[in-house]
Length: 352
Image 1 (tube, one colour):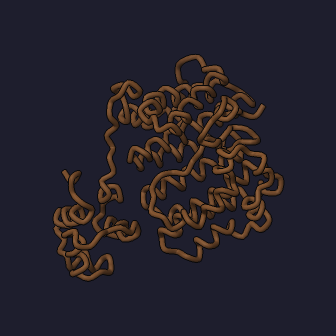
Image 2 (cartoon, helix red, strand yellow):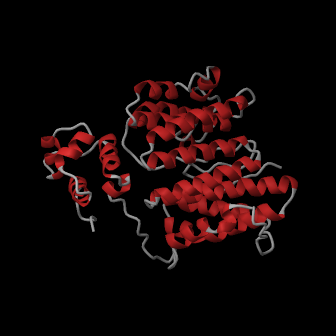
Image 3 (cartoon, one colour):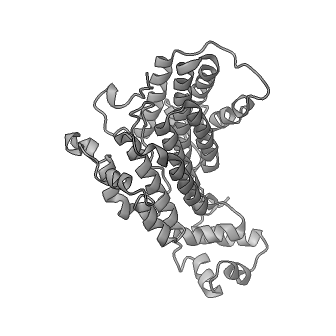
């Protein structure tokens, strides 16, 4: 319906559907009628995300409605003929929603090593931009992770929850790439709940960051800023004995927060988050991680130090994709570098 329209033309289309005059809409967003007329007639380019977001709010539509993000995933040999709708059905399965009904999920639990390998395959597919393959695998993988979390006991159950959290995070990242940002938020939120059940602070931090990216993708900048502030406080108690990987997650969480604050045009919070939110030595350690020289060149680009060097450049950019990388579900859970040289660099390793 609005697929072939520019952003300005979509603003005009939705404004008319709302029965709203240019004078009213211009007043709601603090602009002149002349400015809005030029924007709607493509004589003025709408290239600031904060401005587009204010227009979307005034028109009571989503940011994606004005940006016209594509949601159709083409059928390929990787995807098969069941794509996003099948994944949506899996996420909406009531057995995933609540244990209150006491329904036992049918089936024998998948061995954890096999489940771990399947999770790694999905993450690798995401990193290789094979979204069709990941979308096809995720519904069954979510079901397998749920069965494992219900069937196993003790430490095995915690590992199952770690893998469930990373499966949800994989779903959130893929769905964000496909423009299904609301569904991605559901997946990230479920993943956060699973991560908290695992007791793994690094995986929990990674899911906090994933939820922040989903809020960012939905244009909910203030909510993303609030989440990062609260999550940072929650994770701060682990800084004294933190591994480099935990510090990497902690630092990139604040990087996501700084991007949200920049898009909300909150300069003070942007600078605070880029400084690690007053975490003192922890922020400095994140910026100056040791042993970076021992990494391969392709790994250095994704190191905590590399993230920091690029933080100032990224904070003000208009971009909607997540910066997530594959965390290992272990005490040394980490963002895996995108270029990979072997299984040890890509497979999640739950704590033993």
